[in-house]
Image (cartoon, rainbow, N blue to C red):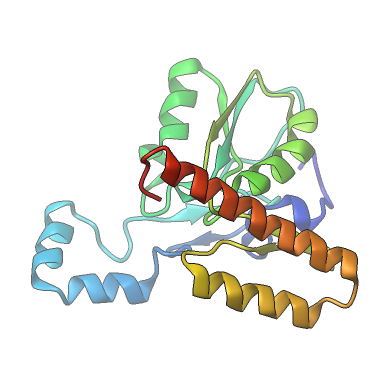
Length: 206
């Protein structure tokens, strides 16, 4: 392991570091069971040969769905959300694997399910100088997603509607005693809302 003792703030899945699991994020046992109990969805699962055990997620010691990081290894870095991680896919079926294989570079997938562009920047800003990739690829997440760092932890500020936004802002107002942090929290919400309105003005459905 060439990069030991890295802070959890620079990891996608610190709680899964060094582990192999069968479920991840929205690809859960509960969701699989719900789909399997639906006649039409079960037929699709069987057609695609998706079972409870044919997809695994393996994480390196730094908490990424990638092989162990090595210094001076020719590599390509991928940043993004669940589409980059490959939720619901074996690693061999992910776009990061196929692109890296075609280029003859090691696949360093730094994606984080549910992540935002801020997440990608936070992770990339730390790891790109260390891994020194030949290429960096960002699959940009949904623009309404955001995050804030509080108490050394990254907290997701993503919201889907006005009610969700109000509930999350109320939570941060209650748990934040410093006015500056409240201001930063509000700026994150305002920025995401502004981007969403801009997308609507351009005729895009968000």
